[in-house]
Image 1 (cartoon, rainbow, N blue to C red):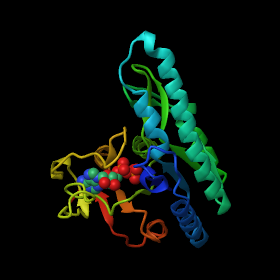
Image 2 (spheres, rainbow, N blue to C red):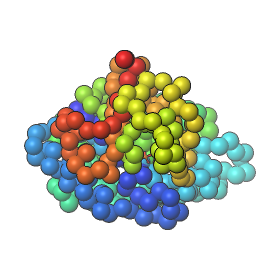
Image 3 (cartoon, rainbow, N blue to C red):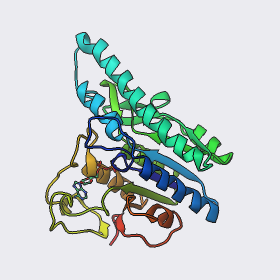
Amino acid sequence: MIILKIGGSILTNKDSTQSEVDKESLKRIASEIRASLDNSSKELIIVHGAGSFGHPPAKKYKIGEAFDESEYPQKRIGFCETQNAVKKLNMYICEALIEECLPVVAIPASSFMTATNKRITNGNLDSFKRYLNKGFIPVIYGDVVLDDELEICVISGDQLIQYLAKNLNPDMVVLGTDVDGVYNKNPKIHDDAIFFEKFSSLDDLETLEGTTNVDVTGGMVGKIKELLYLADLGIESKIINAEVEDNIFKVLENENVKGTIISRGN
Ligand code: ADP
């Protein structure tokens, strides 16, 4: 089983406040997944980020921040707007994947997961297993969910990766983003950023810059924290650049691809 995350940074124009899908990247990635499945059958779960669809409404309504009862009606609409926005993105993504004859089925986190203080504490994955057994590809994405402490919160695609991996114990966890992997500082801002082939501690980061854009879910640092948790459980993961043609195909085929392996080992 492979859990593949496709970052919101590749699927959408994340710097924009508009909800724009990067159709070209989406089509290319869908055809790379198709080519890999044609090569050899494999169980696949796809996770995607919310990109420019989910972050602006989540930020506008400050989903996940404390609020009093009088603010609740507005927050509730914010929840609905965010849920609807990420659902729209998911629809575009599933459409592109189905065009490549990939049997994807969306399983939105908001429909079955709940959290406590922004961490998923409840989410039965039986339906994932059932769909996988029948040859489907479950697709889940960054979403809003009910929260026992905060009423509502945002769940990132990266937290979903962690939750799925620790509960389903996949053979491979891959995160496709718009940089080659982890550097000691943001490579989009610093030309002298040093690349890590292997990453095992947050202490190796010089600046804790989350991301270049409007991400409300933690950006690169949030990603690494989730993956280090998996590394502690003995589950290795790899961050690769999904903007580079054929990278997704190669990584699914277990071929060598430039990227950062997140692991606690040496
Ligand atoms: P995605 O939407 O693909 O999940 P994010 O936009 O949340 O990804 O995070 C990827 C971004 O994180 C990169 O585009 C990069 O600008 C930024 N970033 C910040 N710090 C680092 C770092 N130390 N190493 C790599 N990327 C970093």
